[in-house]
Image: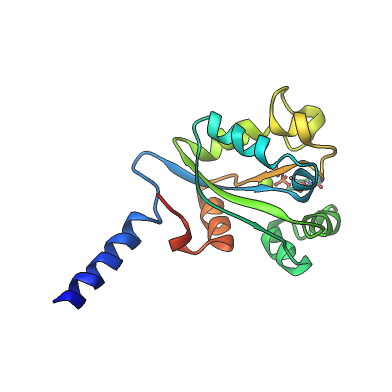
Length: 161
Ligand code: UDP
Ligand code: MG
């Protein structure tokens, strides 16, 4: 009996982690090696929180060149792939799952355009990016990519509420 209760509590705990609350969405954010090296972790995370996004998971890690190539595999045939994956594996990164209403779009707005020269004033990239490549943050671009990108970095039980 006790064992059964234990089993159910595990299953329930597992359900209450993982998926976003109803009406909310999850997205993957990365503070790239330039953002970490520039000491901007706190400032960048506080922008997410101030804009109503909740940090549901977080880790600091470093990608190998192979892992960076796997993460950015959609861009494999682009001319910037080699530079991008060398850069992304050049130092520690901070990876978070952000949760909130319209989180994917909201995060992209807070980030600003890929090219910092085109990013709206007050966005992360306008304030902290130094080039199109070294542009401080990554953010998922759609629900399907958010799902794969989140599971690239996090197990289900590392996403918390
Ligand atoms: N990138 C680059 N040169 C380019 C376009 C993109 O180095 O001409 C890099 C940049 O770091 C960018 C990443 O590749 O953030 C992924 O490109 P994407 O077009 O998906 O931009 P994002 O979604 O990050 O705004
Ligand atoms: Mg992208």
